[in-house]
Image (cartoon, rainbow, N blue to C red; front, side, top):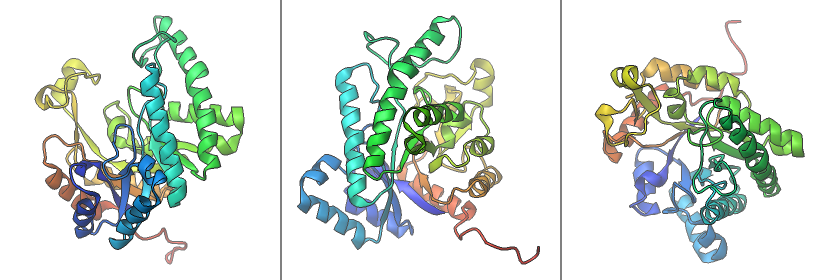
Length: 330
């Protein structure tokens, strides 16, 4: 495995300044924001695809610092009921795919998206329970009229442009938010247009979003064996007192840390070394040997301190050497 960083944490700095910081920490693999929520501070696919000189300068800068791009991130909601927003997110995703093809990058990260509850909706509608029956009707419409048709075509588009991994971040608020929904969409797309397109769909495994929902990341990794295409290294700290009072569904602002049921933390500050060692070992046992990409969203620490602590922590628990092919003792 390799350590990587999602570089939008340094969106206020230039790409060169960011690469200088990361390589000084011996990080030579990056995930670049390329549209949607991560932004385009370091990588604007539309510009790079349109201007050969800008593309050449961009690639030369990566080469200068001996940095490899493991994925482009274009998290968005291409199913948003606001058609203008949906079109923008869809365009960002497709431009990220086209740039990934040009760069020889096989992974684009995004969200599955979440529609409204009908064609006249103004906002997405994330369903969290099956009753009253209205909610099941919403889910049926969302999946069969919007989600599956969109990803049938978008998956085929990605595969046609040699992007073999669309890594969905399983995120509450979107239709794909846990292993069951990820595997359901993967199977549905595969059944509709063929296994090759279905297999393009996999997971960006970010444990932080699973932890607060009550999932065990190790169990989730085992459930997703063969379908994990990228991993975000981000932690979550559960506040036992607030959770005991109010449960885990929490809409208080992320800055209200003392009163929230959970907060995102730098790796090691939500869960300890044993927790992360077990997770990383299970990833290896289930065939994943790509990157652990640090995503900094810790409101308690500065960006510099949070990143530095994450790198130091992960260097101690990550498994870097290839899995051995034999056992000298057996």
